[in-house]
Image (tube, rainbow, N blue to C red; front, top):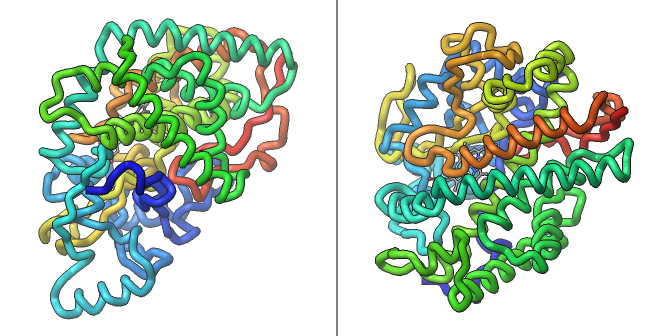
Length: 433
Ligand code: HEM
């Protein structure tokens, strides 16, 4: 078992998973909110298609809604990146070796017996994933979520009022969309007020692609150290927060420091950029659909269906989830050999014409919107209720408090996060009346 001292986020490849996809499956067309035209073409031909990655490996791209759900509920597909490494993790040389193995009758990446010893259950299968997930679910209590909702509103209003005071223009990403989810995670984990500036600074640099690799890795390592300090503090000074609940709860066996630190950093990783990009890209999409925006302004009661529709329409997790077949199986019309990697395309699955009438339209009144933006099955997003609260309050308050909100740049100048695991915009210059 590795010790906490010899590990840091910078040395764990799972935290820096690359997506060596060919550019035509990443580059958006004229419409920044629609999936890449290259993916549309794949989907038109089949619901499951072979794709060659830049490292030379073949994976299966799943673009159909029913097929995506099937993958996410079938235990023959593994999320365990230690026991079943996926093709994204391979170097070109390893791909050549893998091809030779396939020619000898052994498909895909070979399975290993390497069990995870950290807390990253998003990369585990049941029963190991079940144990850790249950412990966390037990901390997302109704009472804690209610208290968080009140704080989400306060944090939202504080940030919008600060924008107004410094306005009438701002970058919505740095002034609002990134700090809101990071502060909400601070509330959840129980980061002391006096430490929040440091936490936010480090988490903002850790995900900032304008920073150098060195700066980002330094910030990630610093964040990891910060979390270790936080866990140590909660052991001796428990309070009413998630980490204290886990440390002093009835976990049997008790959670190790390494697991606790990893669970906390995983919550930040899973809940920060996802929500931030939904807030920023969601605002951008509303501004570019003036009739829909006017309908929402006229009837704020539409916010619930509006948030679900934006989640479906934008599908910011645009390169995954990823799984590996643990045995030969049939998916759609294709046979997938054991060891092969499948990548689900949520943007395509969420625009499947078999599932929605006019899926390419943004319709904020859409009901029965059973999208896959939060995944499905045993790994379905644990923070989805919290994300919904942040999106509802965040978008509603932005529209209510910033009358005449509009872009302060030409759409052509808005940088898109095409090559990132989470899609969105790098910055969003806005102005208001
Ligand atoms: C709009 C924002 C969000 C989106 C679109 C999103 C999406 C997703 C998706 C698609 C998965 C499934 C991954 C897979 O199957 O491999 C997932 C898992 C997860 N999410 Fe979220 N998420 C969001 C916000 C959050 C927040 C706010 C938190 C926590 C504070 C969170 C915590 C998690 C965790 C812990 C998992 C792993 C669950 C497991 O493996 O059992 N997410 N999320």
